[in-house]
Length: 331
Image 1 (cartoon, rainbow, N blue to C red):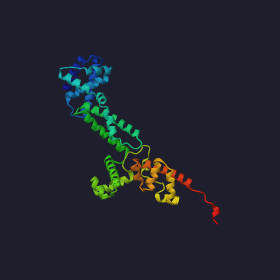
Image 2 (tube, one colour):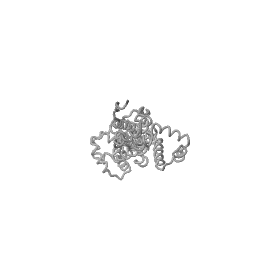
Image 3 (cartoon, rainbow, N blue to C red):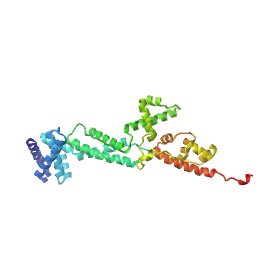
Image 4 (cartoon, helix red, strand yellow):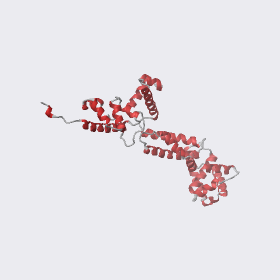
């Protein structure tokens, strides 16, 4: 600090010790040294910090760090009343200490996590908790920055940082950018709308409905062929598995294996629940794996697992349908 700033810090200390009873528990020299250190760090990071108010805030933060009874100090600062300009600045700074800002705006973290968390058929609690963790850290960083140099409303200031950090976390967890995933979700909804209306959705219609250029439509369809509707996928899946081709029997192979469709219908009649829906949609309605996955609101990798399970159940029913051949009839 320069000479003027040091004089200002001494005036603050005088007011601080006269109005806050327990301030005498802090050694004066240590308090001044720590104040200088904090203020020097702030100036190095942001030369535009207002000098007088910056010294007040650095002083108060140093007092908080060095005070042996922080809860008692907080109560006394909350009750601080003064008609002097320095005392008013000191009281205002006390109300916006970083830990106070975090405490008063804690609900922002859950709100932000709820907004940026994409729920799936099976709620991914681990992904939600990770967003909460990122949000807590971002809120604390925002409180520190805002206390050092207040700019407008803290809620708006913190929300901007929370949004940025959570988007970064989602980008780290999912290789498809958030903007592209929004387009994929819009495309999925568009497909469902056209399907219910018995209309054909071609590239021209997609370009018109989503207001995309032809190259953008082609790129979006290429991304969709791998990532589907872009929903968050289970965290325990290996990324390479998401692009792996489905090794289950396709429709033609299935029909060749069972001789005729009648046997398939009889076997299907003995199946129940979602496995029956999977077989019916794939082999009777002739829909693709991706279409059925979207209808059931499942990620493609999760649906592939269900598909294989349904095929296993179907084969079990088909085995029961088969009757042993009577060789005595072959003459």
